[in-house]
Length: 465
Image 1 (cartoon, rainbow, N blue to C red):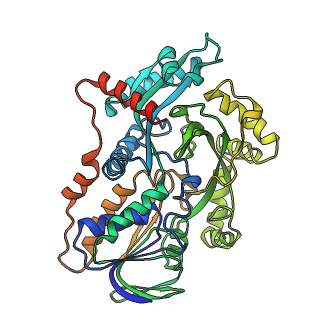
Image 2 (image 1 turned 90 degrees about the vertical axis):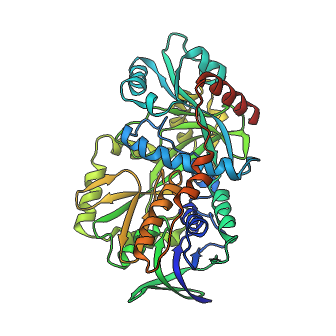
Image 3 (image 1 turned 60 degrees about the vertical axis):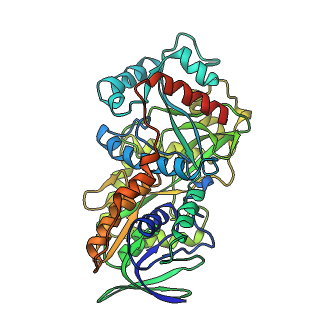
């Protein structure tokens, strides 16, 4: 196979597919191709067993600043609106209550301040503080067995979207396939990308593609490809493998987060029901640093070392990051969670903070769950960058998207679309108004009677469960 395209997207996960959907449905770009190395789209980090299935709004993620929450919020609402519009039967997502739980004299004032003084209550109209009795009404197991003298406070919202990002990826592709100018190639591995006078030539194991504009949305491999083209010289990756423990029982009706340490770029331990089987409760994620770009694939270990670079700056950056007095104990503790028996014992207190009555025999390490999230290392400043990363070059964009990359995939696609239209030669247009109508236009807003909406939403979530 071979072809000449105005736009070629490398990577068929949620990031690449959301850009395919956005450019195919809402621009007049003449020809678009997506290339994916796996036999199916959404097969690696977007697969529902390889991530936390959370749509991050920034409302209960307590390691987010208000500014980051404002940024993430719109992205989450774009995707939530898409799901409301295209998934009425809840085959790709579930809608459940969610809350962040503060336990004890130290945590409760922090959560109160976050809601009232820091502005999160104002930013999220559906978010509300609830105390022990109301927590028990929504999540009985969170209160059951807990010391009645222990202070409890939660910030709760009905906007608990639990998402199968793999199925959402396929939905984006199905929408894009309705357009005549779109080709999707799976089981096609990119072997080389070479700049040309008119863009790039993309060599694959199945043929050659010529593109006026290229977007590489291949997760951890995006930086690997960028470095081969002399981009991202001051960047490296800290690959973090997330895993889960499961209980074969419906312990929770929705998602329950715990408070997060702000210096950690990883999700706080939380409990929630699996997106397609609410009889399974997942607890996690744990976070283990690993030398690979894909979970369970030894073939990705050399790829990691390509990205690492073996430069003095890279070694100094890793040493500086690991010397952090908060991060190092966290990394060492998470290594223990993989050990038989010991791992469950060490993780049990984190589970019991969410559901106090859980015993050791109630949980087990979840087999086949967990993926890798690449955390960005800034080798110039010897620091760990929390969030998504993007490199914009000549007629090419590289997206390296750790959490919350899936949550903000449509917002990222919207930004990239504007960038692409600026670089492509031709009078192309992006109908952003139609894009917003098809996505965020369907996101359910709070009415004047917020209390009614909250009760209805919670009742609906309970009914779904």
